[in-house]
Figure (tube, rainbow, N blue to C red):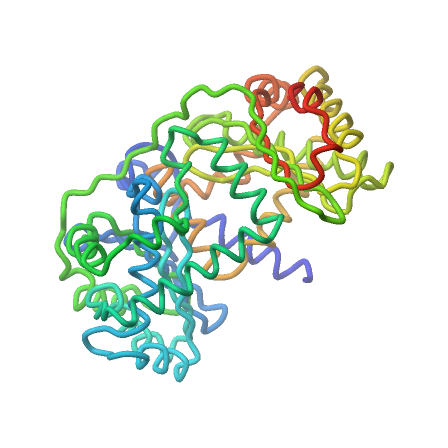
Amino acid sequence: MTVQPLVGVIACLATVAGTSGGVLSADRRSARAGADTATSTFEINGLRVIVRRNTANDVVAANLYLLGGTAQLSPATQGIEVMLLAASERGTKRYPRELTRQRTTAFGSTISIAPSDDWTLFGFTAITSTFDSTWAVFADRVMAPALDSAEVELVRTRMLTAVRQEENQPEAAVNHVADSLSWVGHAYGFAPGGVESSLNSISVQALRRYHATQMVTSRMLLVVVGNVERARVEALVSQTLASLPRGNYSWSMPSPRPKLSRALVTRAAQLPTNYILGYYAGPGARDPDYRALRVATAVLAGRFFTEIRSKRNLSYDVDAPFLERAIASGGVYVTTVDPNATLAVMRAEVTRLQSELIDPDGLERLIQQFITDYFLKNETNADQATFLARAAIYQGDYRVANRFVEDLRRVRPEDVRRVARTYMHDFRFAYVGDPSKLSRALVDQF
């Protein structure tokens, strides 16, 4: 990647967003955010749409965000929205059985489903010349899935197989256990992709009820990024998705996590290495601490790499993850043959971050590197769509993304130390590996 494309990515992303308030209430704050002539927004029958014209190439990404995520779920309905959308590939009113897949394949387009805690992303990537044709298939999958019993059973079997395979993969298992453990008593503790018990119990009738009651325009945010005009998108939406019932859904920030003490769940496994992941709950996305904690975890990740991987060769994979949700999570992660030695170093680095001020010049360099890495990882049109959506949903205005770089550069060493002290405690850990190699006393220090 040369410098010029990166500058283009940053400029493109930096022009697409604005400030804070209620969900999608952008108009009052547009003047403060600066002009963005490439991006526009409109609403039809409660369905909010953001279009960003990008003529750099002919790729177009259209992402539909079904708001709510895990807040839509109960223990018995985990995975229901994913199952519904996956089943729509097996036939719709206009495209029976596998004709939906055949049409998108013929267009060279891809349609994907990505469930998460705050929304389910149902989107597609096409080129300008096949955008309308792909949209027709995509919209019919949202509006009129056939939900044939035999086809639903095929989807159920595939989803169950995926869940079982994930349980047998130590990295996936430790992620699932740690995140669920960190959010006991909160909607984030549900699995948006489902668990074995819920996937087995969801009936075709339940899918049809869910479609009838939850596929409403007030739950939907559509973001389109690519070489396509607003008028073209507006016409397609008017003819299809906007005809769905409006409903009365209103997205709001999730409630704070209940206060939880330290915890550890261990899963014994005979493996070449041991997997450790611990999370703590962070601030909400509208809290100024959100950006400071993002920076603090980047500082910690860098120190872990230096002390654990480079100096001591205790791990090939170590990190201080930051989960970017309406309520953030931070944590520590490592795969290592010596869990106790690694945890001791991690604890020392967390303590150092909580007690010492990072060098201002070093912090400035790290933030610049983080910004560069972040945009490199978010350079596709589909990534830019989620960048816009996150600002619109979490901050109430897609223009907030304009301030992403500015907000990070505003973080000071005192902010890093303060958020480390405020949030980096009461970790809840998952461990997959040899239990005899792990000291509970070390875990209890976090």
